[in-house]
Image 1 (tube, rainbow, N blue to C red):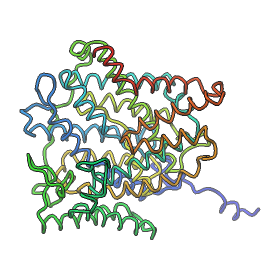
Image 2: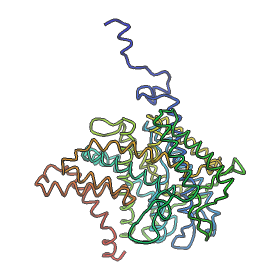
Image 3: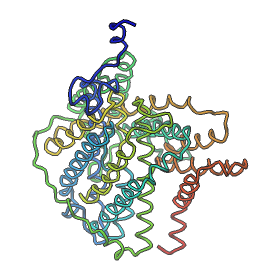
Length: 495
């Protein structure tokens, strides 16, 4: 072979120290793709800066007090928003620099509602956030001892694929629901329907449809930056629509407008910069919950939080790794331990900052869909979260109806993995099916994973193959049975 031929066959070499550190060229990416991916992930997740205060800020604790102080009239929301952006920014940068993985973190949806309505109602907000800190520290200990990674390796590869597919359907449903394209029915046996009364009603939903059409067209035409361009273009349309039609929000005090904007009313901000207030930081009591709620109740609450955090991240990082083509032959992403360490620390950091447990976000898949393959994209996303603390008015410009079409597209991309499941093998097909369908049907990643694990072990027992089940699968499935039965157990114990 000639020297010229050998050189042409050689893999491309890193062009800078930044390239070498993040392995940009090695993973087939580029600086521009990483930046675009990080920006897209931020825009897809930016809603949490607005939504988290709305979930946490209006819930009174057992003493009738509100997170961040104040009388519960909304004056406490900016502090919660600033804390949300701060922790999301720092932890996402940490993920990028330490784990070199295109995964962003922020306050976990579902977990924040559980903290607000199931935990804080039984104790003070400081006690509730102390529980969150403790849960994060316990999970960190499980990571450092290797237990969390061992569980991950014990899960059959095809079941991991099913987790990714289920998450794809789940985030697509999130997109449709947040846009008002899919809604609950007011009455009758059918739980959901198209729009209101079976029809697409309202300009916000029309803006979503337009954004979905645009992102699909740009994607199939292989336009670079398709997702980001679609979000920006749809936001411009949304601002024009609101300026002309004066639609307003879905909820305004006691008034409900079913065809209003879901979370953010688009419009040009009156100010560009706001000084952040961080009054929620450090407001936690690590052991206060054991006195206010009792030992048994506190332990059960920690257990519930821990299981949800434990497996949501496992599914999320697998799905992101698959979409980015970063998984090894066993379906495991690179630097799994580092990813899980960051995620565990983020859970505790969210509690310490008074904004609830932070966790890995499946919305990161939108950035991966834009081309992100390294932790540099996470660094970009994290920096934008930190900037959003000051430039909050600009973040509030983007309505969810303009951002969530990206989730629907990414849901399609993740759904394509379903062909890797052997649907003729009932021992894996039925657990995979339950995993896939229960995530969107229950609106819970953990519920889908748990059902799939329990079904897998049960079918192995029925077919006389119990000995082939990994011991950790037995343990985890047993814990999930306990997780699903948590309410009857609490009732039996009188807690």
